[in-house]
Image 1 (cartoon, rainbow, N blue to C red):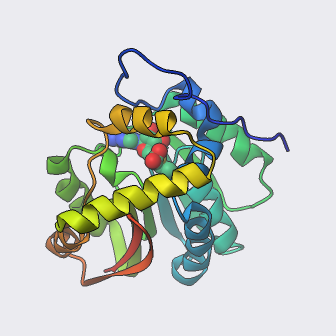
Image 2 (image 1 turned 30 degrees about the vertical axis):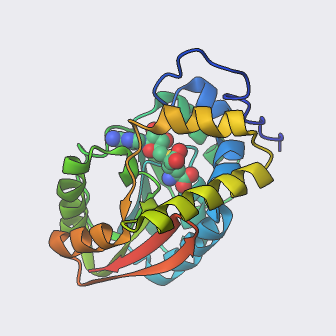
Image 3 (image 1 turned 45 degrees about the horizontal axis):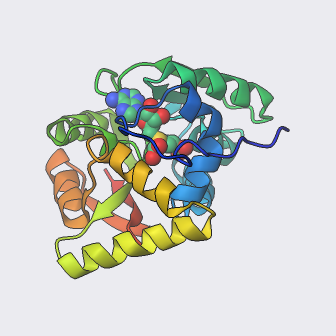
Length: 244
Ligand code: GEK
């Protein structure tokens, strides 16, 4: 197993910070980047495994929408174990999928994983027992979020679930400021400099749009889900489980 490359993409001053995109440079450092940027990322993956054991139904599909390097896909695979269930992992970044393919090939799990290079807004969800959107919905333009969740809901079997992890925004301005500060403190503690934190923030500004927990839950209800609960939160990063 090779050590993942360290993320230094924003370590030197950049004259005009371009919008963040999931290209080859990001794919190369992604495991380090997400681990040091998203509080609780590893815990969420472990829980996805446990939830897959609980929800994966025989002869169904588990979807990982916005799979990146397949962190959640592999967690699903290990949770599914011997249940005859197919994983469908989708991402629209060819650089991510190339690396994802080789990580899957090195993994010892047995459940089949179909890797699909597509926009998650274009795929059809069918016979799903579990769908994972692990920090992906936040990258879609807000008007595209409800239509996607409606399609996910329609493709889920009765008794199945959606795991939705997102960076959150807060309506209360003091809570918003506090959570942003604490996230930056988390990143500093992970070794990122103030320059890296501020340049990354500029890069993401127009690309990733966080919303409030209340808005997410209302949208899940609107999409048809019977209930949703936050099962995890660490500062402004949360994961919800919505039940059909
Ligand atoms: C993990 N879930 O490690 N269609 C398909 N893919 C998309 C789209 C889209 N419209 N928009 C963004 N993506 C992963 C982490 S990262 C989160 C998910 C982050 C993809 C994009 O290419 C990237 O790979 C992923 O969504 C978001 O559990 O980097 O904060």
